Length: 336
Image (cartoon, rainbow, N blue to C red; front, side):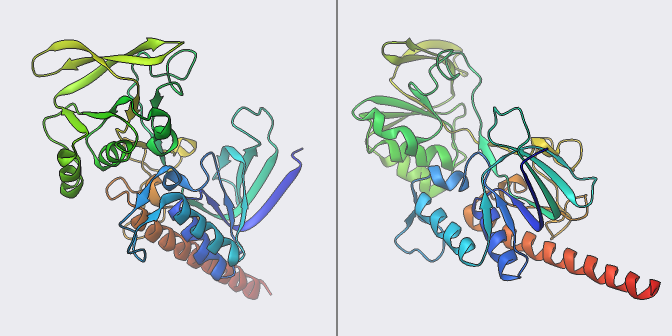
């Protein structure tokens, strides 16, 4: 029998902008929400550098600082936050049941959480290339020259040449941040134009430390145990030529995969895994279950829109619970 058994009106999976905004609104509505942190407390903004486009901070704000503000505001209104790894969920039961472990590697269920309503704000995780040399050490060079987080690992590449893979805003941000440390940043993109916003493209292309390799793919990451990453094998998809390109670091910035595997086969989702919601609401196809943020939004994927959908999910959950209470009171009055 698990040591911890918890029952709440509103349970929120995830503590990024969407999850914590949902918590702020739910706690202010006196619903006493429980937030389950998950594997990355604070979400993707905790590994982001300066955030310039979140309203209210005219000089910008560092991502981790912004998420600390979110967290403290949620706690101020009475939100409870716990850190467990949710292993499985049962959305068919009422209340909904979530089974949690102390960590991903734990075998035994340590916590059972029951929820009258569930808000899914599990966000998304970085995608990888799936090439030789990319895996974590000792199989590859992950953690020894290969990274998906410039903020976390950029400092270790001071005065070294590195490459960034990708063509969206994330890749542009990573490349610009890494110019603070690296001697040279080579941006590798498989197409002949970027998908990033115009202002981000302009900043990257104008930077003296940045070089772009267009129509190029990385086929393999090479190096040694002693020195880490030493080179990559690249392929030009226009000329069909391969070459060895010297570098001491590889930063992968090719997008994200929604963290929704727990709900596969139960909740409706698109081909990628983004949860589908009903019209302008955050309702999923299961009553009492709502989705918001990057687990649901495959189009905008911004902190401000994640926060907005978190607000919407909390309001939807509040109305759902109010309707259930009204139905219960009506049935009680009828039976009496």
